[in-house]
Amino acid sequence: MYRVLIVDDEPVIRRGIRSCVNWNELGVEMVAEAANGVEALTQTAADAPDIVLLDINMPHMNGLEFAGIVKKRHPHSRVVIITGYPDFDYMRSALRLGVDDYILKPVTRENIEEIITGQIAALQAGDRLAGDMYIEARAVERELNARLKREPRPEGEPLFLSRRGLRPNASVSFVLLKDYLSGLEMWQGGGDELARFAILNLAAEELEQSAAGLAFTTYLNEMALILTCPEDEVQEVLSTLRLRLLDFLEIPVDFGVSERASFSRLPDLAGQAREALEYAFVLDDAPVLFYTEVARRQAALSPAYPAQEERDLLEHMLCESPEEIEPRLDRFFAKLKEAVPSVRQARMYLMRLVLKLVNTAGTIASWTDGEAGEVPFADENLGLQVDQFASLEEVSAWLKRCYAETYTYVRSVHSRSRQLYVTIRTYIEKNFASSSLNLKKCSEDLYLSASYIGLILKKESGRTFVDFLNEYRIEQAAQMLRSPDLRIGDVSARVGFTHPTYFSSVFKKVMGQTPKQYRDSVCS
Image (cartoon, rainbow, N blue to C red; front, side):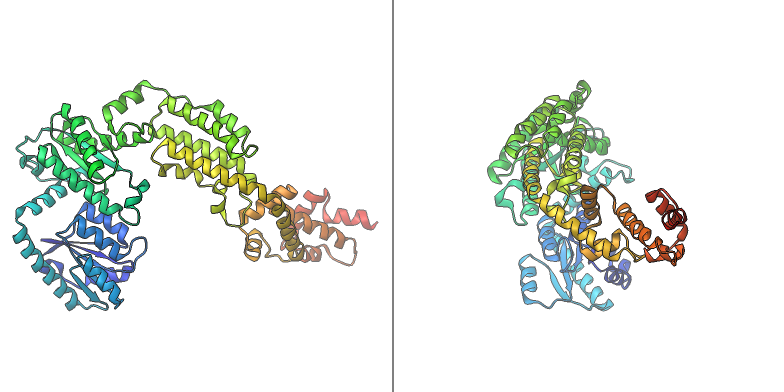
């Protein structure tokens, strides 16, 4: 029985392909769907498909990029492109990537059946030529991922252990790998997936030669190892593997290692390895991180937040140049590193710092008409970006860069703020009589963000948009009420209020009198 994956960003096309064929009759046991290449990569990691029906033009990752990755990671899989683009360059690129067929839309039920039948025949021929080795490796990987997902499994000895002559209660170590491709020039331009494939291949060869375990991709698209070697050899095995990866691929790798425990605890061991690997954020000089050591550190330490260094930093925020503020940031990070907090604590502390920096700088730095990318500290979601960094050093460098850019912007924003205030005030004075005038309409008409308009008004007048508008309307209403010929209800409508009662309430709040009391006082 074979597995099929349909990858297309149009739901109606995926449903059409899925529903037009009796898959069981063709020998297909599972039909999965994905809306783009990124989503499809997760699907292939969880359940490597035998046949992929693939569109080219998709968001996030197009079909050709995905096909290249799949053919490297799962060479057994058959990839068929189904597209509405009869472009020779697309076809040529697809053939170079090893795509197995290229079909133009629209396709019929007969087309799909013919495609699937042909690809199954090719799979069967390929299986016979490749022998049992590849099929067994796929079966082992599927079994391991099923166990990691805690899916019900048949009774009996695990395939992974039985093939290695180990007992069901054998002890293993679970290891996750973290690469640092993002900073390596030679792997830029879409080579990261190829590099990950090379890392796993080299790891598999090394572990096979030393009979120390195996390498595979988890259903979460993680690079993982299961080590069956003695516990006292784990450090040596991983150090040797790291050196080989540096020698052959020039890729530095960190390892997160679980405690030693029974194979039956595989999901728990995977969680431990993830937690250990996260600790590389704090201990960036330790390439092999053992969960047992991480747990010991966390139990022994009660890290204190460097509050004094934070206060010092905030007090001088935007008052000092980037060169002057840099030592203060360095002292904060040095104190934080001395405490050796857990990764979660470190990220929480850093998020707290970043949010305070945003709040401190925000009243000035966020005065920009939708171009927040030019002013890092204007982004209210800036704190969430802490999760993207691999170490404290990276966060420190990023914050220094953000500060320098914000500092430069702040120096140029003061005069512009006053000019925009005049523009906003003039707009309100011209349109105050319209009952539909609100912050949203003002934002749309002036092509400025609503939050930006609010900040400008608050800075220049000390009032919110609603207060500014209401006070101007009441000023105009007071002038009109001096004429005894106008009814109060008419005045209310002329200055933009739809309800006289609300007009009276606002008038009293601003003027200290009701409209009638005010008229009586000025007309008597």
